[in-house]
Image (tube, rainbow, N blue to C red; front, side, top):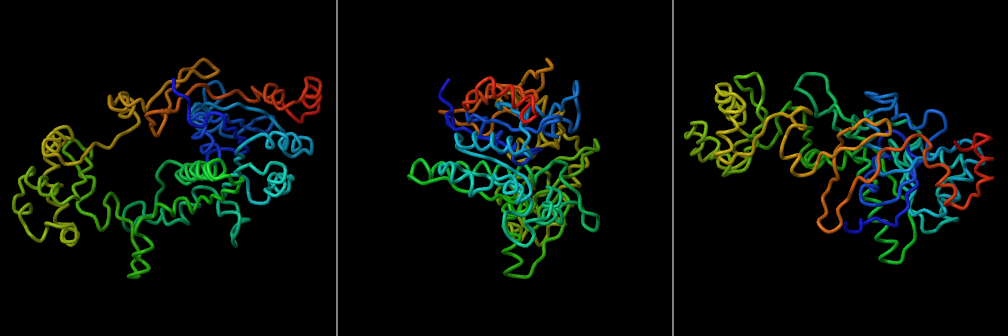
Length: 398
């Protein structure tokens, strides 16, 4: 197997739940050596989230694969000393506590940078390390609201809804991982030092807001929720079928729109010069959506997709996770992989994304049991057996 691209990069993960750990998981998938610090006792709360098997979340196997677990009491002076020693030998430290917490523990940027000028520190929080809201507690759901995302989700005139996933956390995690790669390049390829990567949950989502702000700035336009449609781009929507299911049709390309209209028997719309470009279609989107829905209501999903495939119109069914698990394309691409948990349960998890041709990532280890690697990590950091036993006896490590 080719050398993984982040082999030799040591990451100390102090975060819990989703955002910080997702950033570390992404780095670990491509070879980084990730040491996950968990509090003694229950460990990372994610171990108890969602559906459990033998008292541990099956989600754990996706989020904490390829990591080592070490238990340290970060609230104790000696525990903080242990973390300082580990950080002095790491390339990256990831934390997602409320701003000021690390400083309270003597583990702020100034202290860590002085001890290890090469250290890169990822700080994930709800609102960032500066600004008037920095000290407020911030969860992903609140960040989704502040970013403008929640306002756009749902049907017009109805309460906003969430996507059903913690998008604020995972997207912030991806921004954190991207920041690490940029900082590593600056440090190693350009002879720089370490630096802080300040990731705010709401900003990570706001970064995906496309034309939202430019349209408001230029025209005072406030985009409103539009259900399954994409305002200003037509046609793109979910349309009802005879079977009660929906089919997703994205025919917003000029040539694609014409092929779609011919395929559903609406040559009049296909040849209408006023509909040849997107701006014209947007002005008559209700008419276009009605024409497409009138056709889909006469079709099963399978029949509709067959026609649309022949016409080369981008389309698809609305997948459940059952559809995902049974889809041969997912399998052929290696997007679903299996891991065997410490309990012995075999669990399917998302595979390695993105796919690198020369240095692909890999799942090489299951999610660790709580504190599974405490002794090994401390020994590697230079603690002798007697010191480790003493730290354990006093509850500093576990």
